[in-house]
Length: 290
Image 1: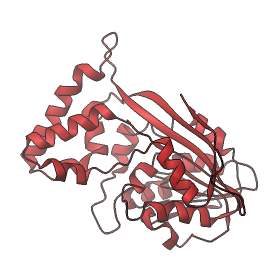
Image 2: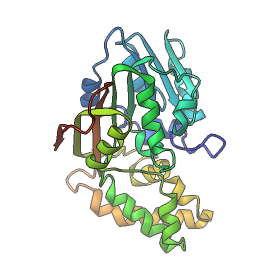
Image 3: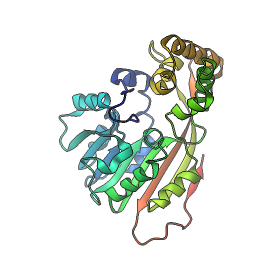
Image 4: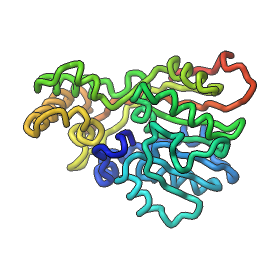
């Protein structure tokens, strides 16, 4: 979802299907906001392994799924490649305007789930991504997305920073390699308005999420799947030591004593923004935090 084309593909389809399988399952509110219609033409930015993209396609005319991970797009094609009017593309979504499926004024909706906090990490391309999403929409089209919001996974973020620093990584370097961008509602609204959107609805939700507790899951599985950019700064032995430290530090913080399940403090930022020409984007917007 986040890596540049030509760099290491951190996403492994099997690991994502295990440790990250909760990602497409917790989307009922987001899909209700998207409200796919039979005549919709939808661009899914950061589509991952395509499981949610395929569900959306069942309710609309055409969907294009774009993701930077060749591994995840391969999994999407293997699982859903036979579905008509469902197309996949390997593309660095930081440069969405260069996608072969980017067409100005073509899509009725642009959608993204759990991907913008990777795609928008690069401050040099952040605004351009939102501008490209705006430009891809028909007039009155909508951008609907959910991403990590301010304070997302703060426990593991802090533990990861501490662990790699304890292994000798400079604090500034540790911050630089962090692959995530978790904005506030206020910042995201400003960025969207700068791209020409009207923010119709915005919600910041604290949503503790149960980790997958199989042999490849738990804290360790989550760290290895979602935080390899931190670990790859270290030697192999240091990586193992850092993972062990994160797991030990968070064991009692995340574990529910009554059943042994582990819960991570997810904070989700959910937004619907509309492309309307000739409207003053400085007008007040609906912001509702939960």
